[in-house]
Image 1 (cartoon, rainbow, N blue to C red):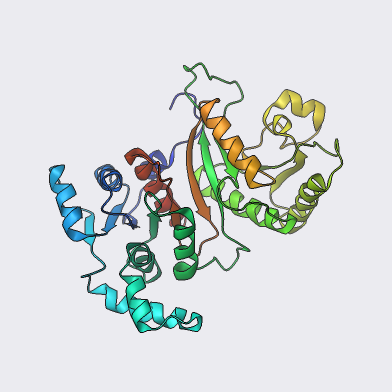
Image 2 (cartoon, rainbow, N blue to C red):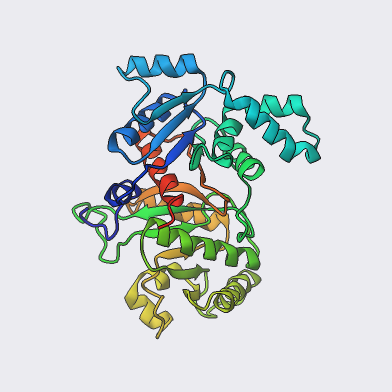
Length: 343
């Protein structure tokens, strides 16, 4: 892994001694990219996969590739699955206060997105993944309605794992390191309290998926009071609230990105900080900043971006980009599997 200080999710999962492989349900099992990514995950032995969709289409797609179900790859068609009746009853029970009757519950559970999430809720799968066809709002809605928000989470947010390029590329940077960017895909304009929640979730995600001690930078266009504005105040207040709530975390703010990333600049702008210049968890003040930053880091900086990855869901559920490749699907299967592991 030239030029990288940590393993990718697939590499990390392959390195672990796991007695029983995690089971991941894929709600778009008829999509060729999903099928190819699932086959790669099965062959790499990082997870067992349940493809959810039209049985005939899935079988035809597998046959075209000279493959078939089995050996860790299972096909579920919600229209014919014996689990659908059980799921419908459970879904009706938990959604009837919202006016969902038995017929609507049955119709919902015959949709692949809800069915795949119900597999997780009812313990048939350890996590679920969708978004190659469904929109982010569809994926998040199903996760919230079926799986729910984690008891210790204020909200659901998202992040990207950013992996630096090889030192052999033109993008080689002496400060390059794997990082977590949050939020880059979901929460548009978080409040100060929401920034605290996002930062706490992101610290746990960095520990689980990057296996690093999180060094959190609360980012702004100001460093340590160099500018005055309500947007800066929001970040500085979030920094103090995070320190009070989690004194065990290494956090600094407010910081400009260069002060968070480059040690020499950190020495000038935030002298004496253990985080500035070495941050690996970048918390952006809003979605504009986070989304733009990850795309610039990816397209100009040459970093590999994995995500958006959801955090704050009671059990693992993740979103794919509709422009994803089969390789992206495999990597996100590994991410979802790792989120479900206890250590």
